[in-house]
Length: 299
Image 1 (cartoon, rainbow, N blue to C red):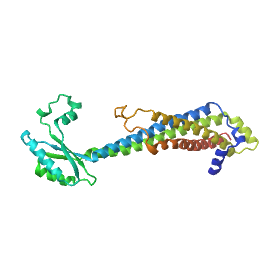
Image 2: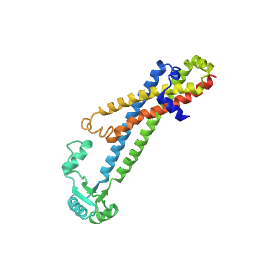
Image 3: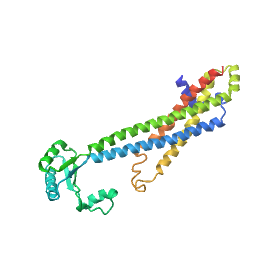
């Protein structure tokens, strides 16, 4: 049965097509709904993929770096800092380690305390940034060595930052999929209403067709084909409009870094092209279910 529906959907049936009016409020409502919902689905897909990439990028960046915080009295701060650097220089898996200057620490604190913060006059811990190699290092072993050589040193391997970012990436992807599913469900509901309205408006025509021997499956196929093609056409226009909108978004530099990576990259540009197909499938099954149900009511 499904194979026959698909064959008629592609080839068409001129006699059956006359059952459904080619124009009217149900025609533009179906096309507009499919187009608008697909347009929104493109942006939901773009935002979810971009957010996931951003979280992954932040997580990867944090995974390759760590920070050692040295808190000690002023007369011991430099000594412990050098001791920490000596330990890091002999630690397998640590590629580079350097102490941040007063200017760099002032730049880190400037967003919260302003540009005139007297870093040198405040008991601010000395920060040491280290970059790990591809093999990585033994964090627990490094902590024990630091505790022995520099009691005021604390290693922060950014685990508490990476875990929420990884969790956020997974949830954002899931949220994007749920949003697309909700959009397709809304599209199916609207197309169902439009199909029911069209069937009700053509009730007299349907009765005449039955009198001359037309079967309900024949009538249903006519509605399924017309509404599926309308949804497919509208969804295609909506997908193209959404892709153009995503392409016209400001670049990362123009957006000040806030929209970094927003949109599609590489093969990702092919993903929106699958949305019209999904819209056509939704319209096919929604219209078929609505047509068969409404035809039973009209008996």
